[in-house]
Length: 164
Image (cartoon, rainbow, N blue to C red; front, side, top):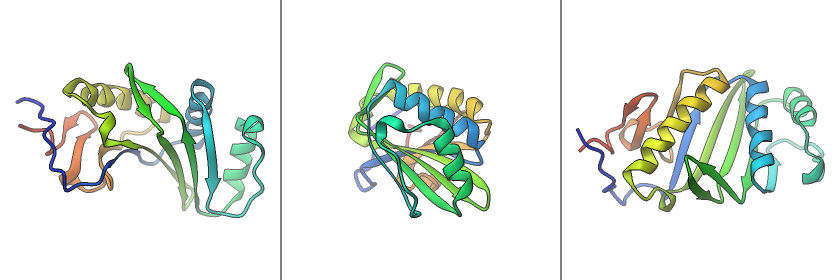
């Protein structure tokens, strides 16, 4: 069974990796590590809270703000993220809060997926990140990735788009 990157062009141009039911502290650790290893261009939140300058964004500030707000979304735009030696340009990281549950979504352009190794490397990276985030539920595909028919992978299994 081989991997085939001849995608149907009818999908979105956005790829997303979704990690469901993650721990908030581990999610903020991931966001702060990404800020440290990349350039944070901007961030916003769906609720009206004062936001500090980008240079003063801290773990404590994020934790206190996110736990204090009702359900909402926090979105971070980066200049790039390097995953398994592949540069993903202008990715976004979204932290969703709903009913005291948290999800992390990582978004990037489909043009950054350029070969079979890229997708398999992304899966490997996702497995490692899922362990750090303390979740077993994660998947990747064209946005919206919850659609099983547009998935590249779910956990350790390749999705229907990649099966040759």
